[in-house]
Image 1 (spheres, rainbow, N blue to C red):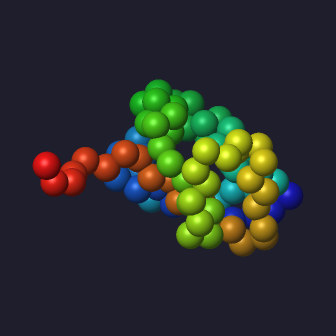
Image 2: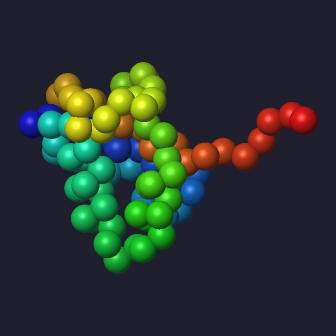
Image 3: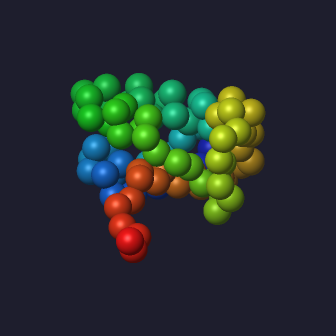
Length: 88
């Protein structure tokens, strides 16, 4: 089991009510399950989290199964909701 930091950005930060918090988990799936449990009083959080992408120590998780993404001690998990923008 690793401990580290979750950083929430934009709508994820608003839904969580915090910019960051600690975690203890072995995988990204464990981190996300713990975060959902901590924020059950904020129903929007789970909806936002379902649309997010994730970075672990700056590397994109992409389409890998969250239960296959193991976390080293001191990891930083970035929670990135979809961002609007771009040019037409």
